[in-house]
Image (cartoon, rainbow over all chains, first blue to last red; front, side):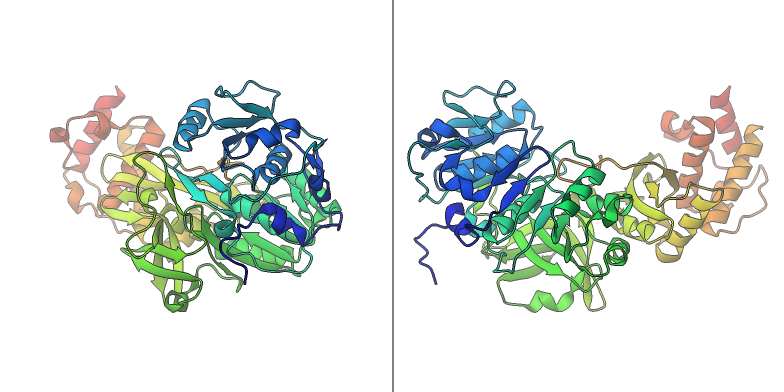
Length: 453
Length: 81
């Protein structure tokens, strides 16, 4: 066992795969991991960033990957700004993170001015002096909050890699941005492993990414259920033949799990539960939605309890704390994080219902949109759905839904047919009053279904 | 289509969807005894908004809520003209 005083750094994490010719590839760049021993994306600025609290604000994901490798162990803090963050968000977050330096693209004006700003460039430039990478850097991640401004949480490599064990050679790919918790998990898995990583640039289509992942020989691939539903609708889905398919970030329903297993019969299809605040809790690979209720009794690395219907988690993978003036406490007196995700026991299994804040109130009866979506998605004609509230003067709100069909066009009576299937499984107030057939559903930057209101 | 016919059609459609049995829809029939429950009535109002583009319940004072089928028809008729 390694001493706790010895900080875990990315450099140390990457040692195991050294000399194997591994790369991180986006559409536009390839980063050879062995090159980082003598080169950097920050060139002469790297030494000056030592000990600073650095805002990482770059558009390009390959540059973000390079800068993270460069800055870990060197900077005091790295604030990972998701792409497309508005200047006002960057400014608030920078203040909360007590940032005193900025790393940016250089091809656009920085969102805020810093006395010390360094440009991140690819290809890597040779290092003039040896790296200093001995510090335990704080990784500051914004929560992917669906409502309100994001909160900042403090992680270290130790908390971020708590769920990552030793593994044989895995060629990873992810639909996520690595600046989000779900994508960062895959980034760290890849760096700590013995394989390469294929990343999807912001503007790259799902089709093009699948083609590139196929050419890269990807064996392990992760995304949200929303990402995967796009794959299921893609003509290029069979370009990859993965050993392992991972879903996280949203509730995985039986329908998407079954469809992925049918598409990739060889693959182990697993849905994982994690949050930026609470860390990775568990992964389920029995092909069914939800997770075994017996896991609540487990006293292992992750402890769970249900408080007023919400899942609370405790583990050493959780963030250390929220950051910023007036930030709330991250954990309760027992060290548990309230995830805000509502669960319900049905028989010997627990199922996710949705976010505590996302409830639709139909005349006093509570409806979780995700619960209705799971039923809609189970219909043979439905690929994806988004359930939301429609204002109503009688009941306050009604449940309505946008539906993406698998391939066939809507035909006369299809709405009635889908709604009849809903009625067979849901109480009347949960059955959508109306369906609207749409070609696509909006996604957030985190790859989740965009919900409004 | 007349307002009356539109409303009666939609009431029938909502009742069919929800599996509700309707009383004979005369003008004097109190809405509470029509067979539509409050959810059915809420859905009816939304569907009428889709068909007519109007929601008199959202604009009218609560005191003027219609109590019978006939009043409901008049309620919508007023906002249509």
